Image 1 (cartoon, rainbow, N blue to C red):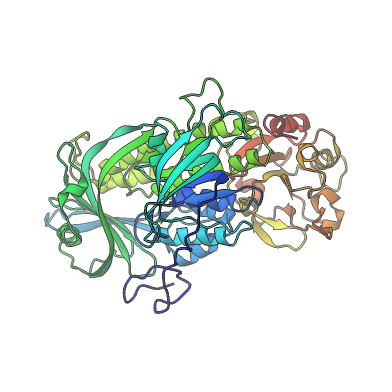
Image 2 (cartoon, rainbow, N blue to C red; image 1 turned 90 degrees about the vertical axis):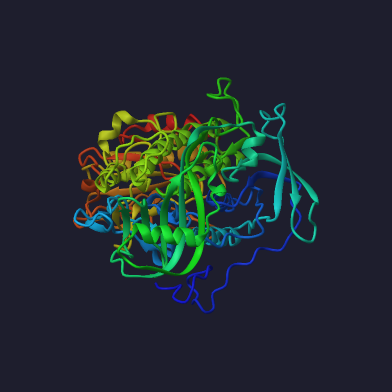
Length: 640
C-alpha cells in the first residue's frame, strides 16, 4: 500500500489520502463512581490492557487519559514479530501486516577510506529476525496501532472507550483493605481539563489500578516507586520526514556513521515515501536536559545532511520530530507490595510500560515491551476478578515482567553505545564500527523480535524435565506457531493463531506413534481422562452450564494421515452453544509438507501435551500419560 504522497495524513490507512481524517475523541461523559479496573494512560500498554479486558462482560473497566484525544503523530514506529503475534490474538494482525513497511534488509554505511568526509556503503544483509516467527518485523505509525486497539475496544461486548482530558491529582491505596478482594481500596482523584468543565474534580474507586501513564507516571509517584538507573548525557533527534534524495538505501533500514559529524539510523516508514531518521547530537552537560538545547526541526535536517554527505537530502515535510536524551531506568517495584513481597500480599496497584522502564527509542523496544507487559497482566486480572483463579496469580506479574525490563535496559545500553560515534559519559572511548552493530543485532535477534523472551521456572512455568518431548516449544517462551492441516476440511492452519486473547488456557495434544483410532493409544487415553475423569481439570474448572471449552480449550494434532472427523471422540468435536452445534476445528494432522513434529522437535514415538497460558506462553510440557501431573498443575492456582 502507498500513501502520504502529497503530505503526511494520520488516520485509517484503508481510506485514501484525500478522504482520510483522524479519529475524533468520544464525547465527554462523567467518570463512573466505582470500577473493577482503573487504567491510567492511553499508550500501548494501557490500550492493550483495555482491549483485553473489554471482552469480559462481567468486568467493569475504565481507562483515563490526560491528553485531549487519540494519538495522531510520532513516537514509536517499530512493531516486533512478538507484538504482531499478540495482535493476532486480538484478530488484528492482518491490518498491520497489510499497511506497515516490512523490514527484510539492513544496510551499513561508514566513512569512505578514500574520501573520509564522505560515507560509503560497506554491505547489506538480510534482517536477522526473518524466520523467527510467521510474522515479519514491521514499521507503522504508533497511532495506527492505537486506532486498531481502540476500534476493538469500541466494538467489544462492553463498548469500552477512553475518558480523555483528565489529569490525575491524587491516587490513594488504602492498605487496610487491600487483602479483602471484595473491597475497592483504590481512590483516584482526577481534574478535568476540557474547555467546558476545566478544573472540575471527579473521584473514582477501583478494585485494581494500573498505571500506564508514561515515564513521568503520576501513578508510580503516588505509589512511592522509584526509578533506578541514570542518563548517558547523550542527546539524539528523531524525525519523520518526506524527503527527496539520491541516497540509494532510503527504503532500507540503514546504520550510517560519518567520520566527524555523528551517526544516523534510518528507518523506512509505511506508505512508500515516509522515512524516520534518528540523528546523533552532541553530548549533554551534567544535569542538562535535551529540551534545553533549543534545537528545531531544521537543525536536525542540517545535521542529517552533513552526516549523509555526499548524498542530497531535501526534506519536503517534517511530519513529527523530537529531541531526547539517552537514559536507562527501571522501577524498583512493579506493584504496590514490598520488594520480593515476603508476606505474600496480593497487589492492588501496578505500573506498566514506560511507567516502569525507560530507555532510548532506537531499538524499537518501548512499545514492544510495554504492550506485552499488560498482555501478561490482563488475563491474570480477569481470571481473579471472575473467580477462576487464586489471587496469588497477580503476584507473578512483577516477577515475570521486571526480569524482561532489566534485560531490555542492558540491551539498550549496549545498542546506544554501538550506534553512536561519540562516547557517552560512561562508554569507552574506542570507536565502534557498523560491523559491531551487525554482530549485536545477530546476537540479540530473538530478544529484539520478542520471540526468545521467556519466564523463569515457577508454578506457572514448569515441567522442564520433559522439555525434550517438544524441544521446539521452550517452556516459558511464547508458543512458536507452525502449520498443521485441519482434519475436517484439509485447511492448513497456524496453530499459534488458535491462542486468542480470551482468557482461556489451551492444551495441545500431540499424538504418539499409535493411531488415535486405537482405543489403547496414549493420546486417546488422555482424551478420555479430560472428558470423563472426576479429577480432569476440564471437568473440575468448567461451570456446569458452560461450553466444555470455555475455560480450558483442547486441541489434538496427530501424525497419522487417514483420519476423519467422525472417527474422533466427541470431546474433540464437541456440541456447543445454544443450538448444540459441533465444533469441527479442534483436530489436526501433521502433513509431509508442513511436518509439524519435525519443525518443533516433538517426540514421534511418545508424543506429548503442551499447556499454553492465556498470554500464549508455554506453561508446561507433560507426557501423554501424565494425567495426575496435569491436574496438579491446574490445582495449584485454579478455583472450582
